[in-house]
Image 1: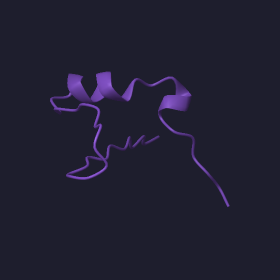
Image 2: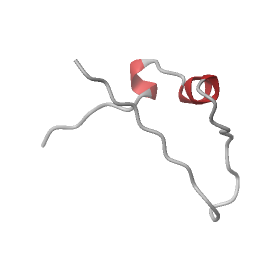
Image 3: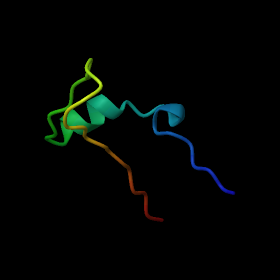
Length: 44
């Protein structure tokens, strides 16, 4: 099984990167509601 590291493990600030690209992102304290997931696609 091959596993890819998290963006945070590679030194990428996910919150700063998402906000710089126009996404409204914030931390959540409640375990319910709408969740947003972000991914990074790198093409060589």
